[in-house]
Length: 130
Image (cartoon, rainbow, N blue to C red; front, top):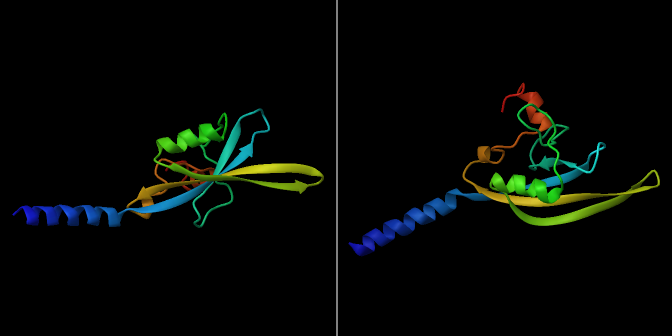
């Protein structure tokens, strides 16, 4: 009887583990023309519109004190930090750098990837509902 219960428990745990899979997103830092705060765009690696800046319930761009502030926001939504890198370039004799953060989380269904996240493009396409 114990062996049967143990086998059922193992199969249940294995079935749960297989149902979940790891997904990734990329946060891209955008500077604000109005001060020190940053705006953040998000890339889920899927078909997207032209503007994936994070927005609030009213469609206003979310401004963060830093990328760490943005990471804390994403952490509350279940995302975990994986890696960060900086891309630098030169445009019109101006040197710029853009910070990219790779995040991950485990989901059971693809529809869970964007849970709790609003983007400018998604807000427009949904008529303000999400």
